Image (tube, rainbow, N blue to C red; front, side):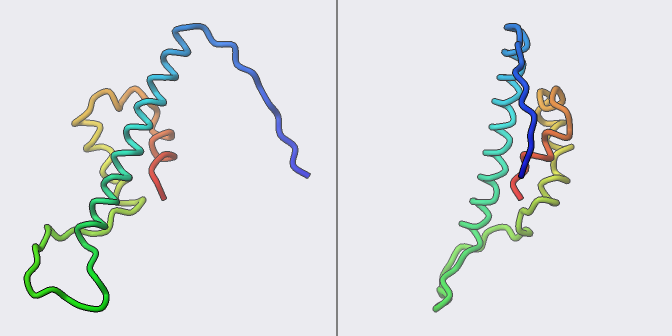
Length: 97
């Protein structure tokens, strides 16, 4: 049997707006990393039953996994200064595994 505690938060308007801003930024980051994985797949997939004679060769790079995307986070924080407002633990939790 699982037991869990439930808590109800009573937040004021400034706290609500801050949490909504954090959630919006986390959602943007999650979608950005997920789009990176989809674009890698689209660029590197090929049919298994044939190899085309003429094809476009994309820039080769490793498959974006959890650890490579985790390493890219400090660079993204430099490019996007608003990422620094959210604690690092939250960022690592939202990176798709």
